[in-house]
Length: 257
Length: 175
Image (cartoon, rainbow over all chains, first blue to last red; front, side, top):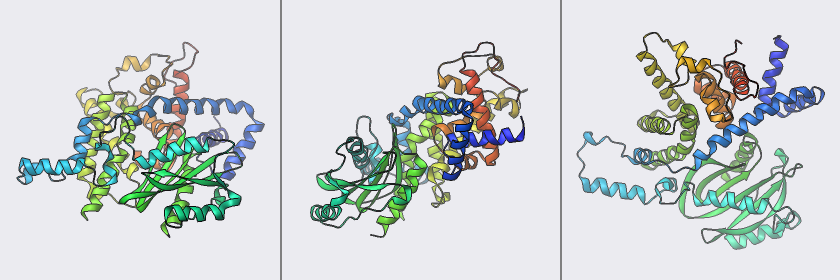
């Protein structure tokens, strides 16, 4: 195999795995148009990727086995280093199970779900509202000022949505919706391909902090984090790397608030 | 300080579903996979003080799990006095050398994955299933990015052959 062919193949793999920047992606797309027989391999590799995800993604939704849960809940100090009475051990285990921080959702007795309610709300809202072709938002972009004033009134604080035009997404509008019995706000964005991003901002029942986590469910990726009194999520079916770039911007935007 | 550690432990807990998926795809066996995840969590929790918070938690955990997996394979290789590491890396865990040389045409991609040599399987799992970048994958397996790309290419070509409808093509091809 000549070196030129090898370099070509490396670019094709990188193309399939979204490793190329916009410029290089465009060049490969052009080249593929002129060399359509190469599309065959691309299609095979993409199909392999999909089949692999299909085969193993269901593991994400499985219950965490008891042994692993117990390992997570173990006290950091090994038992033999200090004598601990059974009563105080039991008390500390009970404290862990009541979930004093948002992160201990794994130990809550929910049937199959191990994700926080906020993230579930984000995914669910995205599915229902971003999936609505004709009426995805209640207040559209032309009513933005009125909408934001309404949000300020309902949530008792000003929430300003970020601009995502750097990523090719224009602001569509949004709606007020519930999260934990309090008003939350859903902002929606759309690009020229009709792909949508939703941004959910909810109010926390108690002050909670959690670093950015991503939950991939089906075709969707949901980046979310808890920042004290508010929680944020960025959800979309666009490429995960691109969504992460958007999330970084959103995170920085609200970190200044 | 106490709440910081608690947050880190809960961040580790949040990674468990991903670790389980990674281990399942690496080992092909649910109970082996969960044992591997448990060992990984135990090791990670005792090493939390070594974790650099600027680095990606998931990458750190995957590296621990992957190293434990490689060690397990090496332990098995020591049981057979004539097997060296290079030979072992060409066999999936638990497979005899006869099976590895035969053509096994499979529809099931999970079965096909098991037939890949370990060094190819781990790369395609990290990139296709765990959706890590080439760079993150290179960091986890400790090789240059070029090595990741050549192993990925071989993995994909071998998967294509294993799952093809054309009979009589051996699973091993000289590259």
